[in-house]
Length: 152
Image (cartoon, rainbow, N blue to C red; front, side):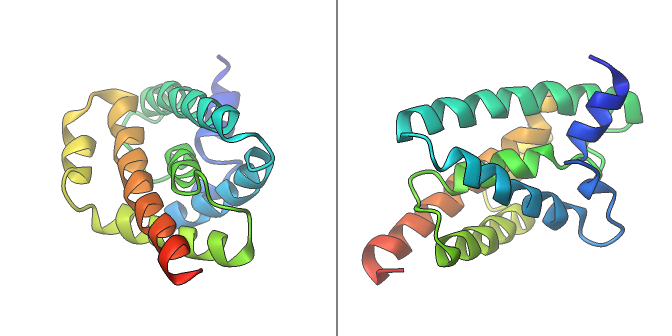
């Protein structure tokens, strides 16, 4: 793929170039992506999110090669993939999106076991994206529990 396409995709349309909290800026780009995906039946959403995650692995790996460094902060396509995992089976309401956003950022930053292990041990793009997918799964579990038991 063309290097320009890899750069714009890896940086979440440039959001990863933010001098302040590029991961948070990248996650914000995940919100409209989620809103598009949220219209899909859940099996198609899941298949689309998994496909997006594998696309993110490829783009991240190519971006690492282009930038010459492992998991640079400007790569945020992984945050978008992680946010899609976070929002699986959640209705696209403002409260769900806000809670999912905060939960994902908390898990992505705190990196409880095995998130940090995924980041360190998985090779190339799998390491870049894998930790965000696990953070998204953790955030999704908490979000769905909040929705189910607190009527969130």
